[in-house]
Each structure stands twice: as structure tokens, then as C-alpha cells.
Image: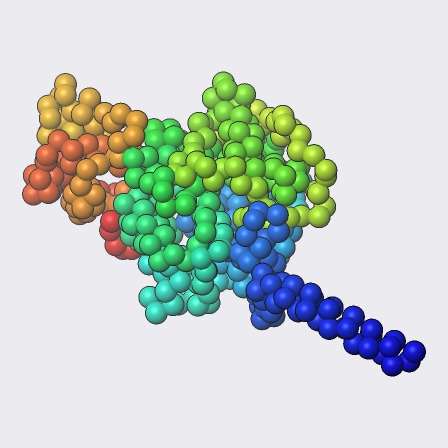
Length: 490
């Protein structure tokens, strides 16, 4: 009897081995052993690709306290991603880092992105700061090319074929161009070439690009293919400004000690929406629609812009969890399919947001003080630069095309689906020709990039552009805005 029982037990063990071992082998192939860093990256759950890792690149493309909001946007985005479970090793941050401890900051060491005043600066990695925030390093990071880096932490997007990449860029812009705190600026054709190269390397499964800048639609319009697994949304279309918000004198206003806008309308909208919904349920398309409605000020476009989407629109069906993770604090069971974001009734054109800072700084300074005189000087210099750029471009148009045709040529907008310019090398040469004789375009002058593109589209040669620029600009202002000490913007 004992021998029979022992034999039955052996047969049972053999059956279990034959059944369970193949299952365990299959399981091991589906979920292989991970290195500690791989496990820390929190594999994506619920999107059909459990081996994927989330990567994020955050870029604030400006410097100066008057541009406070761009670095505040990026710091806030970092906090959103951390709440979603992304690890610092997978988040790469570009910011000049001259805001938190700036002498104008009323709360030293603190950056806020909304009037409630919660610090978003704490813990943000200083991967690329100061002059390391540049186009070359951004492209090297995105391509995972450590050898092309100059300075910085050395972190790059070392992604694999199952990974998902999220890019958030907040800055000034213009038709076909995005600002950087260093020169040259980032041009649309170069960015698209890098995105295509990244796709050709087979090193990601999908990419989402959120872009805050004036005329930001022009970065992708007619340029971003729909078959390279990149989905982009922009704060504005190809012809309009984006908007700053939480500005002094507006509602809602920042704390009274602040003299600058705290955020940008599109940027704070996607982040505030992220706090309200379950990221495992809300799709990119749903967030796009909610942010679009809020940024349009309920379709009135008073103090607002047209949020746009480009590229592989099939990707907008994916859940936010694939890119920004999942925050347990708002894992509510259902998605509320209406715009629960409170409206922001006031905002300011991005290009005028710096004037708010300079005006408030002048207005608040004691009468007769050195601070008052210095603030007045800064305000007058920025106005002088703006007037010089505007009048110079207008005069060049008239010299090239005549008094009647000049304005019409410069302001021409190409049909939807066409890129800004046919020859991007020509555009960059026109920028250099203009700046050689008329001084730096700087962040404000990017608004005239369409005019320079139209000069190219009209067949004007670089030598002719240089000649008329010399005629139009016998001199240019000696202030820091017009100075070429940092080089050319192209």
C-alpha cells in the first residue's frame, strides 16, 4: 500500500512538472528578470506593451526673470511626472536655472506656477543648465548620443523599441523657430530631421510632443509626417501668439509680491487637467480637447489661441499613463467627459508678458531711487528694440517689393498643409543678413520670421537681402536686446 502511494505521488509530481515548467518558461519570456534600474523605471501597464519604459525630456528655452513662466512650466511638469512614477534617471531637464535664486524672486529658492504658491522647484534635476541649454545638446539627448554632448549631466534618452517618449517644450517662438537661451535658435526643419532620425533608429515605440510657443503650429505644419509614431500638440496655430497667464493685475493674479506671469495658458491647462482625471483612463485626445476648449476661452479666443494637433493622430487614442505615468491620488474610476477645468478669463500675449514685468518693476520702485532709474532704463531699452525691429523689417519689405506690395508680401500666409518656407537654408541666411546690419532679432523679433521666409519664397538672394538691410539699418540700438555678443540666431 505504501509502495502504491509513493508511486502515485511520483506520478503526480511528474505531471505537475510537465504542466508547470512550460508555463513558467513562457512567463519568464513575457516578463524577464530586470536590472534594478529597469524595475525602477516602472513598466507600463494596461497599454499592451508591458516592457516599455517611459522617458521624458523637459525644455525651458528662455532665460531672464521676465521669462519666469517658462521655467515654472517645466518645473511643474517635472512634479507631474514624478507623481506619475517616472524616475529621475528617465527624466531629462533643460532649464537655464536663473530664476529660483534671482534677486527679483520674492521667494528665494522657490518657483511657483500658479497663484496657490506651491513650490515646483524642489527636487528638479539640474541636467542641463546655463549655456548647456542649447540646440546641440537637446538633439544629442533625444538621439541618445552621449559623444555629441557638451557639458551637462550626460543623461540621454537611451530608449529601446518598446519605449514611450514625452517631450514638453515651453518658450518663445515664431514662425518656424523656437527660442533657446543660447544661440542659435531651434529651427523646424532641424527638429523634424532629428525626429525622423530617431524613428529610423527604431529606438522608441511612440513619442508625444507638447509645445508651448507663439506660432508653434508652424513647427509641424507641412513638416511632421504621420508615419513616424510622433504625435504633437501645440499651444497655437501657425499664425497666432500663445498666451501667458496668472499675471500681475489680472484674475487670477499671483501673490502681490510678484511682478511677472507665473505660467502659460496651454501649459498650465494640460498640467491642471492631469490632476483632475485618471491617467489610466484619460486619452491624449480627451486631454487635447479639454485643453483646447480652455485655451480658446470657450471658443471666443479672447486672450486665447487655437490648440492644434499634428503627426500620427492615431496615437491620440493612447492613455496618458503611457507617457506621464499614473498618479494614485487621482485614480478615480471614471473619466468625466466634460471640461472640468475652470476658465481663465484673462491672459496676455506671450510677447508682451515681459513688458508686464518691466512695467511693474518700474511702477513699484521708490520715486527718485536708483532702482526706479534702472527699471526705467530697462523698459525704454526693450521698447526701443521692438520699435527698431518692426520699422526695419517694414522698410526692408518696401525696399525689396515697393511701398504697396511690400507689406502684402511680408504678411502672406501659405495655405494649410504647406511648410513656412521651401528653402530653410535660405531662411537662415536671411536671418544672418538681417542681423549683421540690423542687430539681433532676439525673442521679440522671432515674430518676423514669416516675413523673412516670404522674402526667400519670393526668390530674393542673400546678397540682395544684405544690401537692403544695410540701407535700412544705418545703425542699431546698443542695448543688450539688439547686441550680437551672443552670436547669430541662425
